[in-house]
Length: 346
Image (cartoon, rainbow, N blue to C red; front, side, top):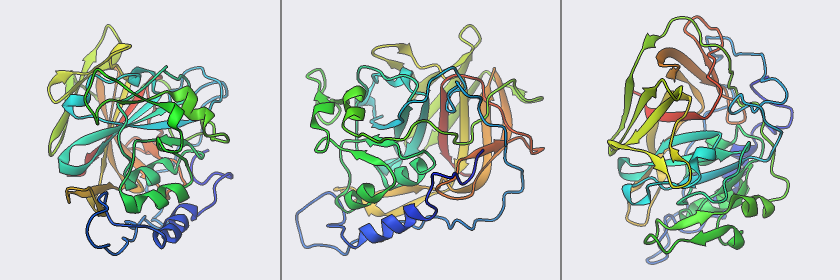
């Protein structure tokens, strides 16, 4: 069942963030210059959000199947990894083994990926880069996952430590990270997922986050290709009938991995969200955007060579995200890897 789960502690995310802010250090990555006032966290929508106009799906994913992919899987810990995505970071490693991949906007209109692993763990994945404030709200719908990242803005560090997740930067799990001599820094840091989870005992296992899998809903529009644009990045998803999946292209070039070839999700969810400036910035002064994943809005679900209009709803940070058809029926995904593209709302 989606929504507030029994293992959750309502309000924990916001309370933890507010408490941690008081202990936050400098605002940004640089330690030079006079201290600036510690920022307050970007407001998280209240847990008393308006009731969604469409009913939430209530049939859970059957036992013995992954709630992230709909494929057969045993319960296993959840590991989220923040992945670099500029041109110098490609091709990626290990991304094909992810159950779920989120696309998030970062500074300068670029994007980064948040890969979620549970059913399968690659030997290594990356390149790994720094976390953002939005990651805490996005991951709060999971059950105490681990989050591996390469660093964060100074004032964000105590917030990550206080969030309901197991923070795994290199200083806390040094044996889980390796550098590659084949690439220049900072695009050469990789994670060894098995070691990362060994450094974070007590990580929660995969739980229902609102996804539903099954036969395609009626209707939809035939589509061969769909492009999603950010200010300084674009993603194109092209239907490949032979693969029964979508081929991914980033900035006009086919996306592939060093260990598994082309990226081929079976379902792509273009989730239209509000993206606005946060109180944080990088060491160059670029303001970090904040992606709102609590609330409701429209979405476009790509599966089986068709595009389906949908609505998404998430009542609080500790609730799962439900997707429904315009008539209010559960929106079903095709079993397999899912990409959720958190696109700017028009």
